[in-house]
Length: 188
View 1: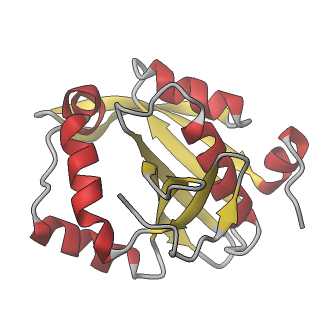
View 2 (view 1 turned 30 degrees about the vertical axis):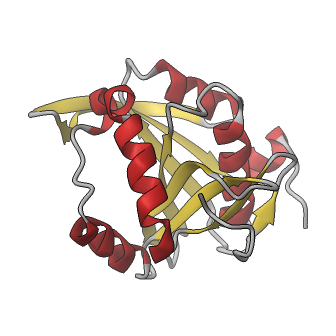
View 3 (view 1 turned 135 degrees about the horizontal axis):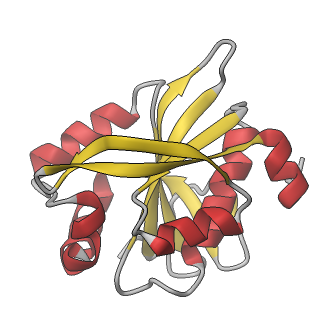
């Protein structure tokens, strides 16, 4: 389990947000393995080797990616993960958000609170203007999450991502700074 000595970026009522660290490997691997059946329809089989984790850490060190974990206040236990990928600067100031809940803590609202913190960070400190989420149409938990936070459905992407040996369709959802402010004003 993570310790509380980590430097958190933001705190919510029940969870805090911090960057993923090398020391998270064992905890994240255990969570992913216990959640494999729940996640497999949406993410496919995942490689949980130290080499795969090292590759992930290298990717999130790039300016086009950010990797976060959602931790319980008090204990520091990891309850979810969120990435911002494909960050584009310049006139777009946008990125694609992806997230993972874990079987032992799903259904408690931690992901809603954690993604709300990521929106605050993305539209504040990271100075992004827009985030997009691509979600398989049958993933009702994920669709409900983005709806709760004010994302709007923008379209449908046929054969968007290769998962479990086949190209899967996805719905495209997005939120902008202005939409997030209207949904729940973000602190300064």
